[in-house]
Length: 233
Image (tube, rainbow, N blue to C red; front, side, top):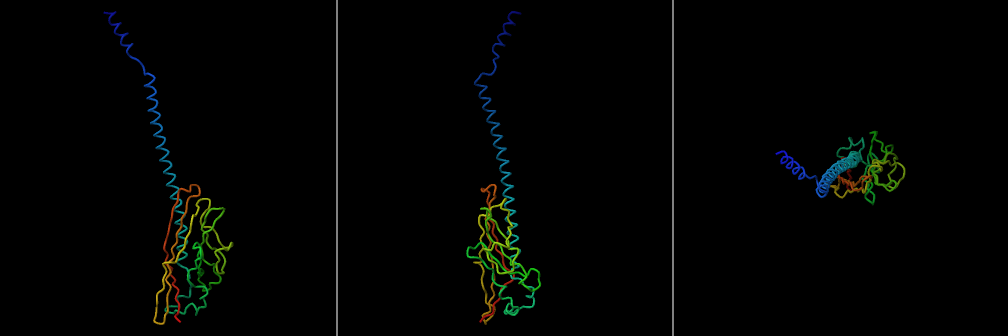
């Protein structure tokens, strides 16, 4: 019996073989595939998160720029003496401000506009900076600039008086377009008195300076609150 039991024991041990070379290679390949898949998924997740953050930052910059322009543009042509001009289409002439209070000025390229604004409310437009925004480039990167000084009629090609409101190190403005094609005039009286109702459409297209593939376009339609009235001939 002992000899028989010993023989069966050795026979059992003989049949218990380890992994062969083929099985080991298959196991390693499957493990490598699983690890690679996990790494790719993690990389995609992290990449998507970074892209989302950059897109959010780009949107924030463009919205802030649009909000700044919209808020200033809505008040264009404001004059503190307008309260005394109700139903008077000759108001600009009576106040001697016809040379100042006018329609919104847009350059031929459609990427710059300017206007007068009585910012300090002292009824004197000659001592207030002309309001305006334009598209320009700094070291090959597009920026939007704001007119911050100078009380003479603005020139979109002037060097002085303009400061960037977008950071060229962060955002590259691809294009900036201004249009008043949706503005219109309406007749006020039989004498031919008219009122100009101005609607200015702004369009900004920008991208991240560090990742040009991340782009965003934003537009807004601004209704000017201070309509310009003109007496008929």
